[in-house]
Image (spheres, rainbow, N blue to C red):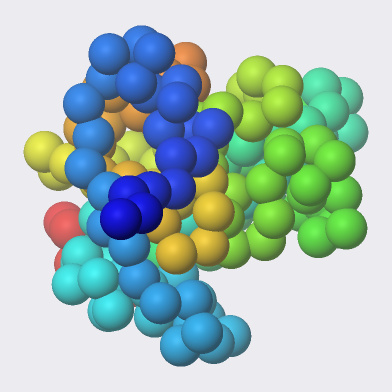
Length: 172
């Protein structure tokens, strides 16, 4: 009888090696549409304010950086630039994702990228015992504490979203 092998991603291997506890939630990727962050939060039952998407930006002075914001929010590029010591920041093109991070669109985790980039997580993460981040592949979400995300990524927590975001008003 064949064993049921669960996929272990690079993010999971790194968390395991660091002895950081996490839970996984898996979901069907064929049901995910345009706003997949919010759709995944709905599918998994994890509130959108606790579900964080990972975005990769390029600063004009310091290069590549990673930001994690609640799925219903938009990153404020000016705030991200300022907090990272840049004058400007822009999203990288999706074609660059795999080469820079080792992950594909929809599966980018702040943990376990090809290279350790400066990482910034929206400060609302600190309001929760646990948050959800990508597990390193489409179909896998990791649940862990904000402090464990910080241990794994050396991230900073900061205000990096636009004021018009729905989630910030829910939390306050």
